Image (cartoon, rainbow, N blue to C red; front, side, top):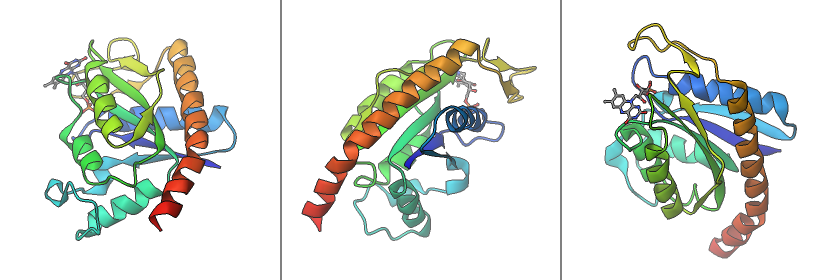
Length: 195
Ligand SMILES: Cc1cc2nc3c(=O)[nH]c(=O)nc-3n(C[C@H](O)[C@H](O)[C@H](O)COP(=O)(O)O)c2cc1C
C-alpha cells in the first residue's frame, strides 16, 4: 500500500481547499488500486507557528501529532489556493515545523484561483525542494470560473472540475505514486544510517 495524504492547505472559514482535497482523494481512491488516500485538513491540525522551525524533539502536543501524521505517508498532494504568488501562512507553518518527516517523499501540487494558478505552486516547489521532497512535473490548476459552481465570492460553492482536470489529476497522481515507491528504498537507507 502506498499512503498518500491530500493536504488541504487553507484554513479560513468558508475555504475551498477542503472541497478540492476531497475531490482529488475521491477520484484517486476510485481510479487507482494499492493506494491509501487520506485527506489531511490543516484546519484540524491547530499548528502553532511559534513551535518552528525545529528538528525535534517537539515540545508542543500539536507539533508532535503533526510529526506522527506526516511520518505515516509516502507521498503528498498539496492543495493550495493561488493568492499573491504565495501559499497560505497555515501551509507555510505546516511545512516549516518538520524536516526529516518530509525527506525523500514525493509530492504533487494542485492549485486553484481566479486566474493565476501557478504563482503559489512555483514558490511551493522551491520550499519543498529545501525539505528534500521530490515534486512531480504534472500539476493541476483549477479555475474558480470554470471548475467550481460559485454563487457569490463569500460562499465556497461546489467543485465541479472539467473532465480534462480529472485526467490531469490522474497523470499527476501516477507520477506521485511511481516517485513515492522509488524513494522507499532511499528512505530505508537513510533511516538505517541514522539509527
Ligand atoms: C487577497 C486575495 C488575493 C488573491 N489573489 C489571487 C491571485 O493572485 N491569483 C488568483 O488566481 N486568485 C487569487 N485570489 C482568489 C483565491 O485564490 C480564492 O479566493 C480562493 O478560493 C482562496 O482560497 P480558499 O477559498 O481556500 O481560502 C485571491 C483572493 C484573495 C482574497
